[in-house]
Image 1: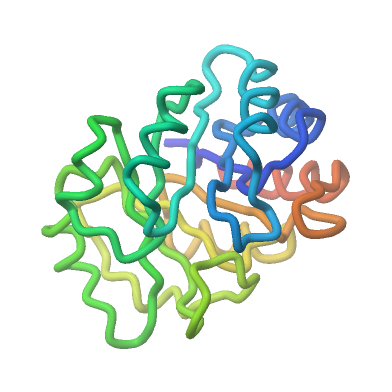
Image 2: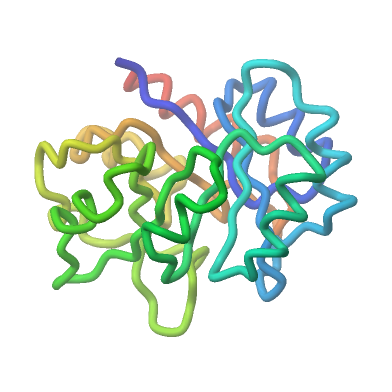
Length: 206
C-alpha cells in the first residue's frame, strides 16, 4: 500500500497547486492564530476554491472555540478536521465531521490508550512533543516509541524532510506522512524544489 502525503501549513494558492501537481494527497490549512502558518477565512476560501477533485482538504484546530470551528466548517469545504490540542473524543466528534487526532509523543505517551480513546478518529497523527508548543517545531521524535500494530492508521509528522522521510517510512511504515517546515523556504511559504525532493523520496518507498 502506498504512503499518502499531506502538505500542511499552506498559506498560498500557488503553493497548494504546486503541492497537488507534485502528487500530494492532502493539503492542510491551519486555523490557529498563534501559528506563523495560520490562514484567514478569506485565504482559506481562495485556496480551497483552487484545489481540484480527489485532494483532501484538512482544517487544523488547536483547542478552538466551538463557534469558530463551526464558522469555518460552514464557510468552506473541509473534508477532514485535525485536532491538535487537548480536545477530548467528545469534542472531536461533536462537529459531525471526519477527524484525525494529533498526539504529541514523548517517552511516557500511551499510544495504545489514545487509540482506544479516539476510536472514532480516522487516523492518529503522531508529532513531536515540545513544551508549550502545539506542533510545527521541526523536531523529530523517537520513532521507536510507536508500538507495532496499533490498529489505527498512523500519520507520521514531526521534523520530516527529504533527507529523512524514506528512513521514516521504512522504520514506521505509516499510512501517511505529514510535512510542513521541511518543505518551506520560510514559515508558511512552500519551496517547490523541497516539495519535489520530498515527494521523490516518498515515491521511492511506494
